[in-house]
Image 1 (cartoon, rainbow, N blue to C red):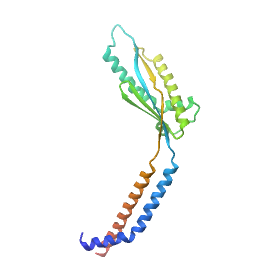
Image 2 (image 1 turned 120 degrees about the vertical axis):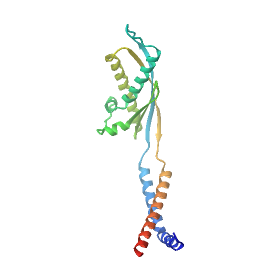
Image 3 (image 1 turned 30 degrees about the vertical axis):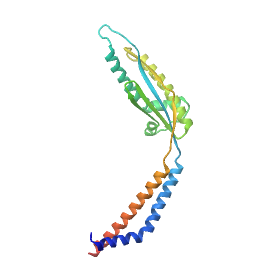
Image 4 (image 1 turned 180 degrees about the vertical axis):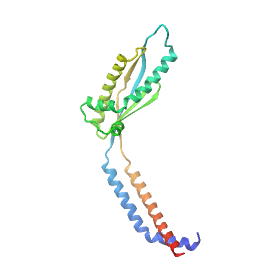
Length: 208
């Protein structure tokens, strides 16, 4: 780029800079209004601790320590997936008398569970309403306790696991308004400057 071309682009940016700043500021204000209307999200965190309660010995097979630990690890993975399936989450809503969403994706977003260790499952229940989040966590624990008992009653009784839920902890997460507003302003400014340069480039091409 020659000095003449650079001066032309720079003058174009200087001419349009007030309008670019105005647009960027407007976008930042709009972002602030949107963020200010988005309330906090309440998250209830608790964990399931899994341990082998008892094992059944048979004549043709004996569970030693290795197989027992491996089976417990697999059961923990199953438990992590089981907690967050839609039908379990909906049952938890119904358990505490709360209406559940009809959208499976929305239902799935309410609860997440992750296997953190061979005998540990971390569960997170989230909602915009604190009371709903806490009640849903209580309902989920009740439903899972009943499901696990039914699983042991109807399953193959070779192994029985003891699943203990820890005390829940309530967290609050909020969107960072300064970060979002600042990022929106910078993004709008850069996009505006690039738009001015693009238009000026097209004009110069037409002159050739």
